[in-house]
Image (cartoon, rainbow, N blue to C red; front, top):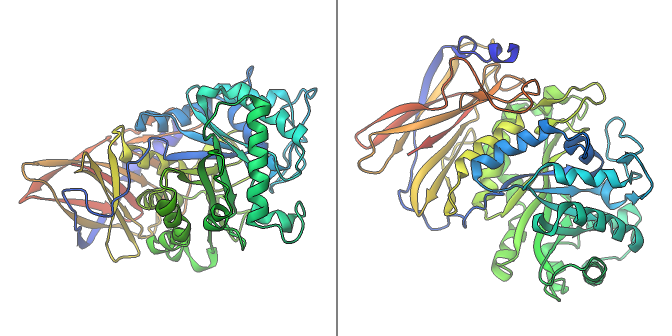
Length: 503
């Protein structure tokens, strides 16, 4: 109840100074260049292997806190999320069939680690999120087929073929030479040949059905040369009809010394980071349109990794998450898996008490909720970025059956509690003829951009104390109604806030 009181209407009722009206150029029909149809799994997650048991639990002790948070996103899109389990410490992991603990040694402090051993109990966690689909990262770095078969078999048996989205083989192969797991000169041709042989072997060893069931590439955010989507596909990785999707990893780096406004809370910064991947996206769309393109491990890190609350889990990261996901959708990315791990500060939630941190919902989770509500349950939803020519504003139009139905707007202007009245901007939206009013959902934080723990979405908040179930904030409504006059709706958005306008 304390958290709700902090978020109460009294706490949010700061005066707002209205300034800078903006008229959005909205197309009532879906424009050329809009995205393909958005899959309900789009706003998904990835889990660092060594943290998997902490997020899901096991058969005797399921983590219902995490399960409820996943459900809140899935209920909004009407379909299952696709969660990827893997990463560097999974790629280098070992399996011990006689180990009683899910993972040894226990995770300690920050860092990724490469010497973890998984036991059978580890894989029970796949059963704890019913209906969720999974991607599992099969170890490849050490080329130990016996170990790879043990892990893949345990994963598939617990996931079930009906919930298996794909198997990955390896992780960030472009870094293998640097890590010492491949010899100098190991490049796309060698990787493609090795990958195909490993995939063929896994199909036979596990008795997998025919057809594409593998996610490939998993290139690092560094995209170390000579690896790229084109170089690997030109080397023949698709031979054999095994590839279902390609995964690229992407982390945006924010420098805290330059301030929030120039990096974390800046639309141009978000676009520049993702636009660096356009050569890969465009190559795949032009040459392999039936192969899904996934950002299979994404996140944000800062130059102060230990400063969890101050620089990573703050409310500004909720706005960044929403913008990042929506811009990726506009670029025809099939799915984004935002990284989770108990050692990271940028994650959507911490699942257990660990290293002095308590389990909690963190600000980035609210960005997922906004995006999930924006996508909705339609199977015919498309996204188009709305150009604003303003670093501090991001806007997206959403279309169902080719008709404008929703608009998402982010006001990135930094506001901190105690810095004076919260300024607001008025956004003028042209709406279809006959529409008399629009409904607005708001993402806000009573504490402003630089705090964690005071966020709300559409009048609700999610906490560990309420076991990850959304709870209404006293005095806040799910929707506010804005009248339409002269075919236009004037929507006021406070600094460091975002909204969805339902038309």
